[in-house]
Image (cartoon, rainbow, N blue to C red; front, side, top):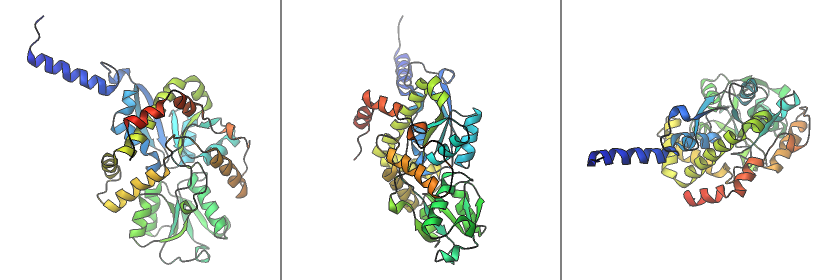
Length: 338
């Protein structure tokens, strides 16, 4: 059969597209669905966004959909219902959920410290000024809820000294702070930078102490981990590749930040990217020291936990398998980080 020049161009284009998709002739119908919930659109879920934007999850044969849950504790409930396959959330809600009979495992981490700063309205200068005021969190039982309890303890206050209100994600809390509906809120980037620019008072920077923690990571049910391990490995591979791509291609990462947060403010974009770079562990592994500290701190603020064994909440097996297979070494070569 004679092949003309224009046909060769089409065949070449199709072949190139197949390489980008990871498998020759890959179609949307061939992709395995994987729905992951995110507690809020914050910088710690950036590997998910980058993997989606660059088609890295498609390369692994997955069709990933990220869904904002407006709070980690709510997301955990949706995960338990089976409507999503994974949830991006911190360890504290996992410990609390397992105490109530759930059987969840955290398999990756993007933040092994607490990246939160507590902001107040300009009129509130001291801890005593906070008494009788309203603090906004995402949802009861969430990482922000636990962070507020820790912050109050460090400020010499208790939950009884304030009113705690469920508001939603970091952007919603910042909006409520701007509108005067709440007096204080725990914020993450990019709203930390925005709050500073608006003149709000940083009353306590939990991030500054670099307390070992597991603030955000991928959580699945134990049954999903056992029954769909191959799919979860594919997701984690795309996720890790997304993190490495973001860390190696600063311009591309910042463009995605600008798109996701609908901002052209270079201060906000730079601060958000720098926070991601500071927080992201290169092996995406949850900190065992951090996990032990989460359990201890939950008890310290008066919350009941079940097992004190980290293995009942954290599963490192997928990360360990990828290390043995040389996947992280391959990522370091494919996406060199300067």
